[in-house]
Every structure is written in structure tokens, then in C-alpha cells.
Image (cartoon, rainbow, N blue to C red):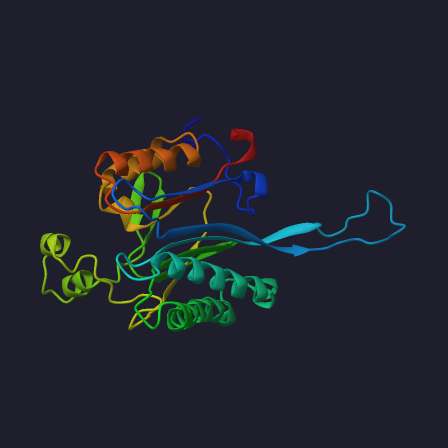
Length: 293
């Protein structure tokens, strides 16, 4: 099955049901490195209504028993060569997920404009930063321990991106692939300032030197809010994919895949075939109407 032709079907504006979400994630050490310092996470946050006892009829209109409030996807890339990079990326995901799961109050009230919701994401990033710093002091005697974090959170009808470092989020929609996140690297900073050309930035020794990282000298989370749409295909990935697979090929795979599992596995194969010099983590997600499944 290819991505549905949206011109031939009616796409609802309602929130996708759980069985209408096609999502898949994977992580691979690559062909060169012996250790995988990447981690990824897919999770849902639910509002649960548990009926303990009632004499209502079976036809009673009660709230959904286990309504999904939010969908969360995260990738984190422990800084290559740093002590404890794998621990750093794991710590970041664990800390962020614990905080988001506890911050349920803002989900109940979320209407896409609640400042508290964005503040919760900001707080999750900074708590993760502090947790990585603390673990660095306790476990690697204060040596550098850092990680990227790219977090996607869907709260219908919006989704939010939290970005620290150079792992990426791409949006594929109606045949067009867009890199939404900005790489937080020294090379990208110099490109933005007009010091580097794009070619210089890509070839520079600073292309993989982070200017912002959880556990690093500076952590500058960037949060973006975007409108959810049934036509969107979402890709989160670490730079083990993007340093080997060009955007044109990524768009081709996302546009032709029959499932997100197939798409993720194909992109992994492409990255490995092109050298696989780094750890590779990929998450692809989309909504598929039931009648197309």
C-alpha cells in the first residue's frame, strides 16, 4: 500500500484513533562504531476513566475509558567520543518522559495556545539538561557527558517540537520534504551569520560540533508549534542518517513507502550502504484512515 492519494478520499479533521496511527522506530550502531550511543522512545499519554461500579445500561454514553491525550516521539544522540554518551542520551529521554507524564494538568486544558503547555516542554528540556549534568558529576567524575534531544509531541490539533542539538525533524507533506528543525552546530551558526557558505558549512570540521547540547556548556531548547494534518508524514532522526542519505532520497522513501516500518528500514539500509559511519536512529509516523488500512 502506498501513501493514500488524499484527493481520492475524504480526510477527517478529527483526532486519529490509536489504530489509525502508523509509527515505527529503530536504532542501529552503524558499521563502524562498536557502541550505540543513540536512544529513541515512542509513547502515549492517556487520560484514564476506570468505571468501578454502575447500574447504567450498556448503552450509556460514558467518557472513553482510555483516551489518548498526547503522542510522544523522541530521539537523542549521545555526543560522539564523550564519556558516557549512551548514558547521557538515555538520561535525557527518561527524564523528559517522566516530567511530561506527570504534567497532565496542562494536557487536560490544552487548546493549542496554553503558555503553560509550552513552558512544560521547556522545563522538560532543562530538567533533562540538569539530570545529565548531575549524572556526569556522579558517574564520570565530571567529564563531559552530553546529548542531543529532538522531541515531537502531538496534542490534537497541534504538534510541538523541542530541539536541542543536531538531531533532526522533517515534515513530508504532499510530495515536499521540509527540514523544520535547525542544527545547533558551530558550522550552522557561522552559516547563519554569513561567515560560511552552505558548502563550507557542510565540509567544515565544525559541522558536527554542537553549540547547544543537554549536559554541554550551553543548552538552548527551541520549541516550535505546528498544525496537525492527516497529510503529514513525520521523521525524527539522528545525524547517522542525514550525513549519508540526502534529502532527495529521504523524500523518495517517505513518498513511496507502504508502511512506516518499511520506510525506516529502507532508510537504515541506505545509510549503511553509504558507509554507516555513525549510530543511526529513525522514527517515522503518520496517520492512515481506517478504510485505507
